[in-house]
Each structure stands twice: as C-alpha cells, then as structure tokens.
Image 1 (cartoon, helix red, strand yellow):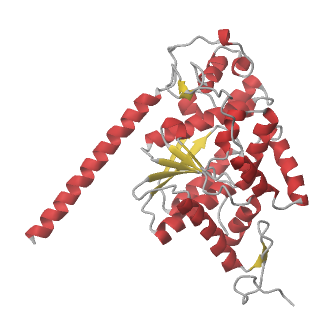
Image 2 (cartoon, rainbow, N blue to C red):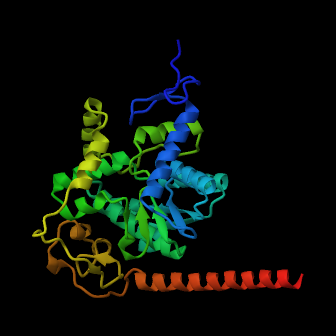
Image 3 (cartoon, helix red, strand yellow):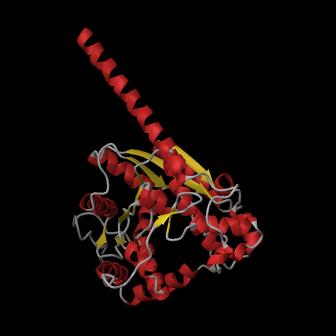
Length: 363
C-alpha cells in the first residue's frame, strides 16, 4: 500500500527528505522547501523593501532554483524587491557558453532583467586562455578570485544593494572543512556567515545556507525547471572535490552531518589573542585586500608578464605596490557611477510622483 504524506496525511508520499527523513507528497515538499527559505530570509533580515537584488545566475540547478524561489517569495510575501539576474561568463568553451543559454531562457521564463559580465571584458583574459597559460593544476584559483570580483563589478554596474548566490548547505559545510584542513582561521569565521558586507560595496548572502543539495535537485526536477547540469570542464582536480567526497561519506553514515558541521562552524570563535589579517584597499583597483595589491591584480600581472605562478607562489618582492598602466577599472570609479545612477533614478521617480500628484489634484 502506498505510503501517505507525513504532513498532510492525504496525498501519496513521493519524496523522502534527506534533511528530516520525512516522506511527503509533492505539494507539501514545495511548501516546506519554500517556507524554510522564507524563514531563513526573514529571521536573518536579509532584505528591506526597495532593495535592488541581483541573483548570481550560472544556469546550474542551484542558481536556477534560487531565481525561481526568490521571484515566487518576493511575489507571495511582498518583499518589495527589484530582482535582477547577474551572470559571469568565464570564457569556458563548451561549458559556460551553453549554460548562459539556459540563463537567457530563465530571463524570459521569469521576466527578470539580465546582465552578463565576462572575464574577457573585465580582465582581457578568458579561462580558456588562462588554462592555456597556467595548465589545469591551479586554474581554479584564478577563476575563483576573478569571479568574486566580477560579481561585485557587475553589481555596481547595476547599482545593486544586494547579491544572493545559490550556495547551499553542502557548499557551506565543504568550505568549513576546507578551511579547517588548510588552517585558514580568517576565512573560517567568514564562511559560516549567511550575509557578508560584500567587500564594502554590496551585501552578499546565501538564502540556501540550510538547504540540502539533494533537496534542491529534487525541487528542480519536480518543478520541471530549465537548468544546465554539466560540470565545469576544468574542475575535476579542484581541492573542493576532495572535501565534497569526504562530506558525502560522512552523510551516508550520519545524514545530519551537513548541518552538524555548519552549526559547529557557527559556534567556533577565534581567540582574542589571535591576530587576523587587517583589511585595506588594493592600491591598483581599490578592491578589499589584506595586502597593498589584491590577489586579482597579482594574478593578472603574472599572466601579463608571462609568469602565471606569480600569484600562486610568490614573495613580497615579486610585486610592486602602486598603480600600473593597464590596471583594472578602479572600484571607486564604479561606485561613483553607481551613485550617479541612483541619484538619476531617484530624481526621475520623484518627478513621476509629482506629476501624478498634480494630475490627481487637477482632476
């Protein structure tokens, strides 16, 4: 006899939640998944009405589900957010070009504006050309550093207040493990935060922080969402892959291991006598950095000088501080342009409101 849903006790159960072990029907699964994300947003006070929020969209399952759920919750609970899709084109042939086609379809399906920024546009290098120069061993270092800056640059181009990314509970747990393995105390403290200051420019948050990857996959499948499922061509040897495999083994033994690791990471505190790196601004591009020149500028200099390992293993003498002729567009310039966009938009809205008031009074 088919098992009934553990929640409504009426419909036939078709899903067993990895997170709770409940057997539930499709509609109840949609309800609890969306409600848990809504509760995370409300309890963490992620947004305020009028915020311009960019959804980091790659075309994969996580970002596609995030875009769908964010739009649904914004409409259902009247968050009052202006939503945008923000994508980064790393320049990986046969992978990112295909996934961006999915993002373009999502743009039409969800009725959200889309901005695509590319490594080629921002840095003058694509990942294909970077891999050709550095090989496959350290390419993920370049991609991770460049992508983070690219999102912040795209956010300023759109004058966003907030960026949301599809990082799920599995991703957070993996990052905690990686930082423990590396002994990276400063990153260990930041990686458990649901929202960060966005390097001083745009707030960045993870509404899926407590959502299991398996449930996101089930949600995308049952909702029949349009997403891209191929893994990155250059990621098989990434360090994260080993942490992911270790986490999956733990989860098979103890299903709650993912949330246990997250809660353990949240409970960790750095002793007061431990000196953490102080943050400042890169002298070249203005991005937040613990050194006089940020990681992105160092990596880019190494590529341009034909010594790509400059940013991977280097001494302080290898990189000279201060601006250079071919530096990236300075973040302060982007910020000023964003502020000007905001002033112009507010002035336009004020004029429209005045015109409406005048029309009503005259009639």
